[in-house]
Length: 78
Image (tube, rainbow, N blue to C red; front, side, top):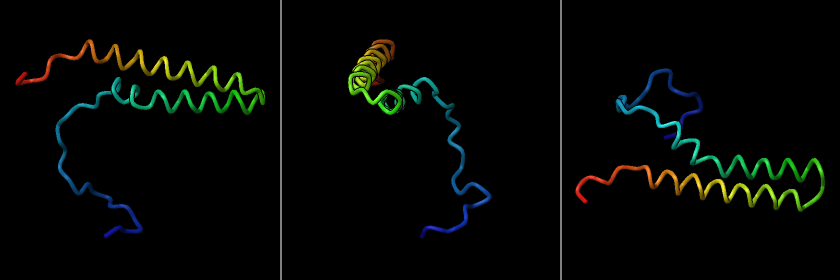
């Protein structure tokens, strides 16, 4: 049942895993590029800037994912 106040102590034990900041940045990179595209459109009222930044965001996200896929070690058991 949800509570109104957050718990002061954690309710689940630590996993011991280290954060993967590169993977986190990659996961949010498209959202940041979309926010940048919206900001560019709001500043200029020119849809060309919106679509330019949006296309660059798609391209960057694709390239980041492609790069991450090629540098990942093979999965265990394959």
